[in-house]
Image (tube, rainbow over all chains, first blue to last red; front, side, top):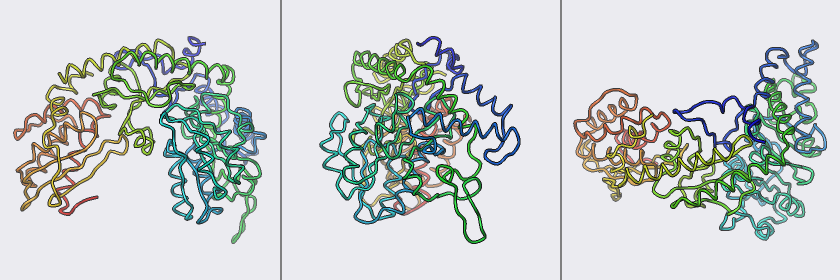
Length: 407
Length: 143
């Protein structure tokens, strides 16, 4: 599938520091295909207007594009209806919306919120702060030594006092795919709702929120070939309908009086102000692009690349890979003995290779791994084995360079 | 970009053989700083007498640039008055902006001049110096 796909990403066809760019920082953000870039410029060149207000033609076009994107997102994750999709600034905003608008008024002392130590800060801090605000208890499902979740631990952690369970579908560090469907079943059996952080799953695999039976599901546009600053929250209809808005202003109202007002129905009541229309247009184009290729194919391709990369990395003495021995997704987090990840990332950058180094917005997980910092290579549909080979060659060079410099 | 500009032998030497790594007791002024974007952290301790840095030690975790910079900084400011230490810190900021400055007190610092060509790494080099500024700007224990 690869050569034609690569062709469609203009940014990949450049040299960085005198070498062809090898972009392996896809878990941080993905690159954008020509189709998305064209959709954005077409929107601004032809259709730009505000939504839901204009009587004129451009207003109708912009509204159709914006609401059309909502339908695309709904179909992409198999929501029952497009009204279950709230547009947000991204996964972070989506998760904060659930914590504030759902959790805020409903939680009290004695209630429990259950998450895991592998959560990204965006699926940890909102719950931590909600617990502090409401007096609820924050609990963590422990991890197995390889980073996986054991359902027996889930059973032990979730109790009838648990009101909210929130778990990341795919870890941005460990590369594990969590059994969120089974966790949702346990949550529901105990009367809790299930929230899924889908930032790293939605771009890379087929997602079916009805099959998962999760109550909320958050995703980001920019990790799935769409523009930054945009994302969505899926919420079951009856839950969204029962939630009060947390932002007030234009667009989200039904009737405004001097002393009282009421709101539109969900999802629009959560979209106060002029929305990120271009974000919706771009995400819609990205979904068309990904759907045409096929999420099954993308998933298979990335699993192959990660497996290939891990095989080749294991040939290098001193490489330590975090997480389980096998990968279904394209995330490989590692360290190289004697070379700090920042130094490693800097050296790789001089070879035109972009990887991530640091704590990956997962400080509690880093402590669990007993690593202050790690390096991460993450793959997407446009990467190929040659990218992996260049990455491996550069790793070997880095090791030699630091060996010499130290020696 | 030349890697050797960044990773000169003297930097790697300070990374592998850090000077002044360790701790004092409660008598020292302690500054804990971290770099939230990357996880580097330093705990700098200064023994102070009459606005003079009698001795300096540090512990921490981080890349070769941040840790070698801490090693060099502590070497450079030991035995200096606040005024002298601040003067060195000011010149270090200038060095990070690519200016041509000298460190006659401790010439090895000049090896860090190459960091200027790697903008993403400047914050690594300045961590220890920011801790120093904090330490001499306040006479009580910080953090």
